[in-house]
Image (tube, rainbow, N blue to C red; front, side, top):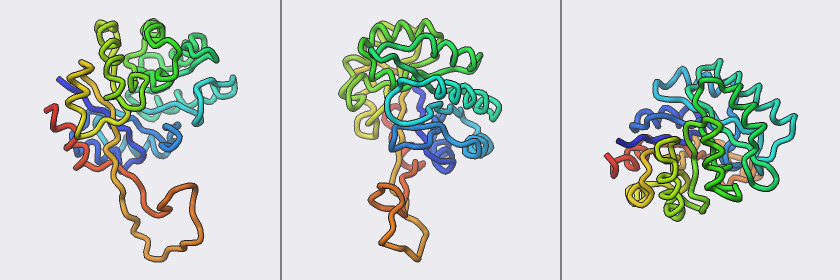
Length: 243
């Protein structure tokens, strides 16, 4: 009765998601920025490595969801590439300066997506009127909305999530995400009435490097050698309360 989507930041995370029992992945680069479009190589290798659903985020940068014409063109190119590489679904969202859904550019992107199902991502959580945004996104023909209920975590946003589930009336899937984990997924499901959930199930993975230069860091990571990756153990543990 429930479906589970893993926010996967690598091919290794995709494989772990499948091994842990997930139904699909949302493949993202740039996780510290909230997720950006993955490379062609990552999409191709992920598709070759898993048989579960593969959704690909189309987001040219971090920051807000107000896009220039150049960025929209970039997204159109990425949609075409992701479809050609075997994506089962696409994930994107555009807003106007007043926090409403950018219907004009969303329609352009939806036309490019064609029959490929689209998830309107957590740009939803930055809309000025979530209930109006719900109706606009339904009108666009999106398959689902990924949202934390406009709160820091899905559990905290459960009251709005429940309202969205009720008002959607089966016209679109409401998928809670952000902060969903082993200890709260059952309560989030009970309070929201949602049937699909999005989470990362990541854990620190130690680097195999023996020589390390402590004077040089790559980016802003506290540990420039280790990585955060989805693990099959955590995927299975998070799913277990709803099985």
